[in-house]
Image (cartoon, rainbow, N blue to C red):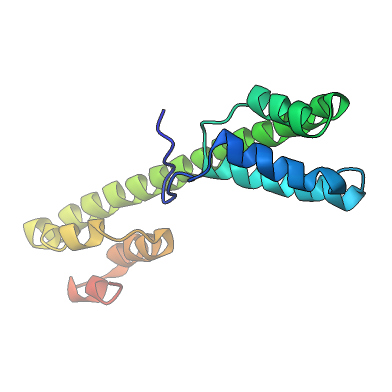
Length: 157
């Protein structure tokens, strides 16, 4: 699996860098805000890279902060990783739904253009197929039903 996520560059830090950072944060750990700060750091790490496991984080915390805090941080890291996983699934589902709606609208528009205007209507379809906005596509689909001329549809794009 690639470390590079869509639109993100891979993080330029090593395990040693993270261990060093955790040593710096050790003084903050006992404070509530310190734990919140560590959570924010882990959120960043999990969004920036896939190459650090929850177990590696546990070991780093045990070595740099304390053994008993390692389990606590591992629970936090597992929860954050799971939240990110669930969020990714939800985003994927939403994108799939939107893509399906767009594809269905494009098919309806293509059929409408063909039935209403014949091959002349299909000449504008390539331009329409490049439209990503679902609301615009819905408007075009509705316009085909009432339009008397192709130019009435062109005003939507």
